[in-house]
Length: 601
Picture (cartoon, rainbow, N blue to C red):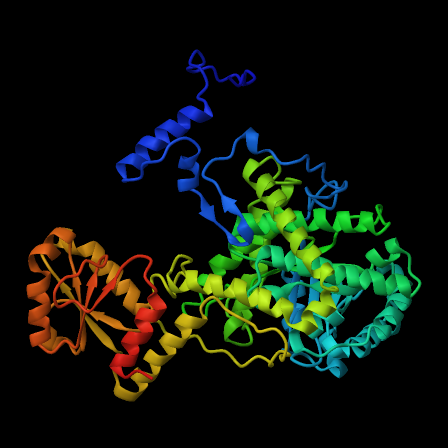
């Protein structure tokens, strides 16, 4: 029995501590009432959640789940943070993204909480020739600049360094990154880039102690549908390639490591994001040690709220998603955090969206006091165990890339694309079955919402790995409904035929309404089928009521003109019922077939 120290709260102290086995037996009883006969360790398996990469989240974590010693913040392997004092007291670097020139937007950001700039230049961004204009009025000795220029990196870097010289900025005051990422660009476009100009930039950047040359951008792998372990593994393989290139160009291993910054996605899965950032630092520390640079220091991390999770329908919900993702990035120890505006998926963000984005970090740092604790997640058995398991999964993926010739080789052979596609296919199946819900899209959609319009954003580079979104299948369905509305003046409709009193049918009627609205199909309740304007109907009630009335109700609906009869519930072979809708059914397949029959193309 575990003996806990006296905490001064002695109420009921005479009772013995509960054991893990006692808890398991209590859970057995609860599961038995729900029809599951399991015992012992199997009760935890029954309540576990399967994640990607073979990871599982268990319902209870105790000291027996403690992971290997993660060390202390600021010391190798840097799992608990890259700095001894964490992000205290000022919080993380708030880095805002700009991909188009907008009068006053850069200065407005810097005047209202943003502390550094992420500028997308060249293809899909601001013309390199306009860099000076974009930074007009910016104190370059105070505001770090991170470039993202793809094939135009050499020209963009030269333009930025020239600006520093023209404005008299001391090399010691320069902060930021030139953003060279040849393999990241190849992942985006399928076009290889020569590394020689990058090596020359690294040599030139040696005169600026606070300026990094390379960015290992893991977003292309995340946006192609990759898992957390695949994102980490691909980033490590990319960084190792850059270390090899820089050391061959004459830099020491420590000098080469000091030239690299990493960019990761932060999602609304807060615990996985926290674990990912912690695991990334641990893995990079191991790589640096093996490469002969044990004193290279911690990985420098730039976290970006995930574009994959952003929805185009009910985009206001994105504010909530990015808030959770930002919290996770801060708790995970990211050095810089970019909060993508809630309307990012719709085009160029407006002033209100940028304001909300930058204030997200401000509230978490200033009002929630998140940065006052060096390692907020430290000591959580769940987070520590998840970090350890994710680190091992990512390391195995990294090793598989190295075995196949390295990051460039797996990009060019198509192997990495296939790996990411398989992961996305598995996740797409969960999204289609609403096992991974999307609030406002696959769950609780609002058909009468007013669309949010934005000016189109510049088209980003393409031709390499695909860019996916969680909402893409449902967005296609809603677009079909919109087209039907524009052509006919009404949305496709389905009639909810409720049987019995409200207590019997309300739950399944609500389920059916939610399901069909996810595809842009308007549910109609009340009245009779002939007046509903629908062509299909859904029977909604209890199993007991179905046994008595389903067949008769289906016959009556068919006589009234219903072409298809659904039933909200598990398949049970009721006469006259064509299809069943239930929790866990393939919602996308059901809605696609329904819209096909309704002529919504």
